[in-house]
Image (tube, rainbow, N blue to C red; front, top):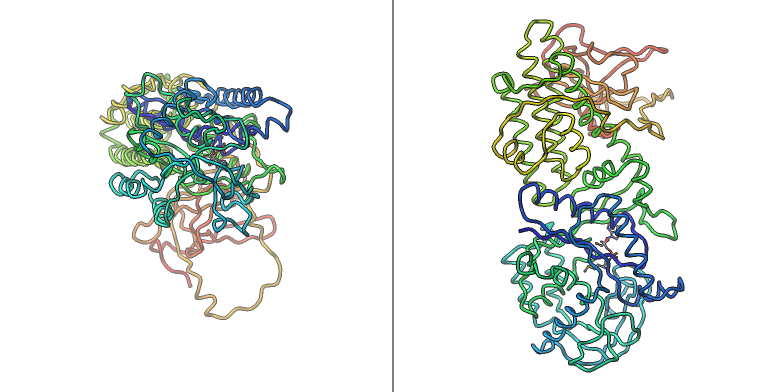
Length: 622
Ligand code: MSP
């Protein structure tokens, strides 16, 4: 049983990139659990009470309920357009939730965990969070969002948070529930500084859940975070026994404290079990800057999806940053990933398989001979699959994708290395067919494992090769390492290439006079001979070639070089070239480049520099 949740989103504003990010990770995880055969529930929804929402509604001349109905529907519509496969769309204004929160409040009260007192301190309306003066920045601003806080002095009910301090620490110790693991220490420090009892009711506005009638105090409404957190349980209805506790609460780093400190304390107070994991992702900036309405740089997920498609958007968000780190959104990077990875590695492999199998074997693809001729490639791909699964289990989505794309490269490189067209010429039909069988099986396995992240594209592959993405095939192809036969059907390109807006590389040769250097400066350069093992065009770029170079001790490195206009990729294989080998690694057009191939330019001509005679690979040039 797996229950995964996103935070429920505040309806004070329309959905933005941050919301889409959390929701897409959760959707990917839920699809992954279903693929593995777990009975899964995936909750998302909206957080509709509180002062911030009341203010937003007023500013727009709506009643809070009208306003929350409208924005909540917008969130839902967007997730439906994005084909987010949620099971529960939860709203805190639903009567069943209101009843549940009141029942829980009463339970805490009856347990003696709630008492009435006076609250005096600062409140950030934007974060719906309380602070003491010493926690503020410059004595007025919220330490989390930087906005001005308001000074509050009002009667309030308090929850005995301090009572649960040690129990929360013990939970961290015993269950290690916080992901990524390095976030745990921040929380421990926060707790060890001493937890203050938490104000859990407000009296200065109305838009919230009233106290249970048994307490008979109409002035108060329940603090929005206490209200909101209980949505995770209230929404399960009669499936509570089955799905609670949650497997993962997925949250942004800014709301980890609420989920990892307040929430377990509330749950302990009402005798409910604690969630297995609380996983906090980082924040997105736009081209290096924090997104904000005033700067006008807020990324609107719908606009991106309308331009590039939901699958490319999903891929970019999941692939771009390690889980837990902050990420930067740039359209140019998105285009790079579409062209270099989705189109070049994924789409292209499908094209090649369909093209070759149609040409050589009427679209029939068999796995006969795969084990005989290509066991090694299969073994390498298998390692990538195992790693991909491990990474995804731990929410390391970027590394999961990285492994699957490495498996795609195994297939793509096998085609360049064994050259099926030559095998056919040499009458080695069996080897050629087995090679296509190898590639199709790798692609099918990748598509099964990739389907949680890119459901539609993987379905297209399944249709083109005539197999099913299912739990059964997950077990057969991934867990039991079986191979399939396929029949190829024509299909349109998976990820058509996108024209890039700005210049692709900035490797312009500068012609200015260079300053004289000393021999010591020259000694800093390491220039070596290397042999070209593989060379391919980079799709979407007219200039770039991607080399696999062999140095000494059979070390293979990838180097990108802007010489496609001057050489045909296949002509360079087996040539020796000279490489500046201690250049810092760089990413060019989305591809890692570890070195620089040396060439001479004369007018419009460019020629590679090669040793005059064959020498050992890795020989030093000086
Ligand atoms: N309503 C609360 C959650 C209650 S859960 C019981 C809330 N809502 S929110 O709409 O403000 O934020 C929802 C999520 O969006 C948070 O996980 C937050 O981290 C995330 N993001 C908001 N801006 C973001 C970025 N710029 N980048 C990534 N995620 C960000 O908090």
